[in-house]
Image (tube, rainbow, N blue to C red; front, side, top):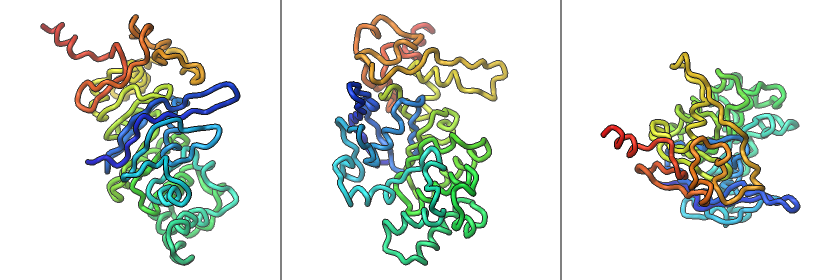
Length: 332
């Protein structure tokens, strides 16, 4: 699978009076065609800011400081006006985290679904309605004609999320950005939404950037994974490789805090401390104060860059948790 979206050395900051918050700090990622890339991390680590940058939606007090976002031979950060609108919603679409906030409460569902069709396609009112009802039906919404006439407050959270998926996919985009699409839903609805996302990848041939903090969702959905902490990628690679051989202590901490149904005596191990203030970062590793594997080098040298270890598997750490060469030496 070839590269569809490539992010190179992206940095985004927010300025508040005399404070500068570096939300994204030199991030590089690749989304392969027809694949799902999961972006994982705690709240506030910069995941949603990255999604907004891809859609060219970073506005004041935010600012893209540097970097490129290449899609189909174009740098999305350099597009203006109509060129941006042709890409946004048409070729790259986003499913937002809170469906009730993403839908306009004073407009009917049908009006909101039709809106994106009329913005990008020269079709009649009758045709846009047909497409909207068809999209709602495809999402498994019962009585799509009735829902077309309804308002967001008349629907459940799960139904609203399906409406958001219908809006995001009605024009068959090449890239779908799903920002915590199941965080506000109960377990059964979560499973249904994730199943639908998986089908969309198959049916549309779309690539999915899945933003989440749930490693269980990552294990089920992702082909590749990038773990983000304090605005940087600290570990990345094929999902199977990252789960099988976890190198960064932060990734290991996320896995230790994940409930497991196959281990009755498994005790959750929370990551101690709290994420750092992004306006007060120093040059050292931002995970240092919370890291159980820190060594003297971590305290005297700058935050390490991503270093390839095995194939596409890379980590930014001076003292990785999993060290196969050390284990091999011990066996000898």
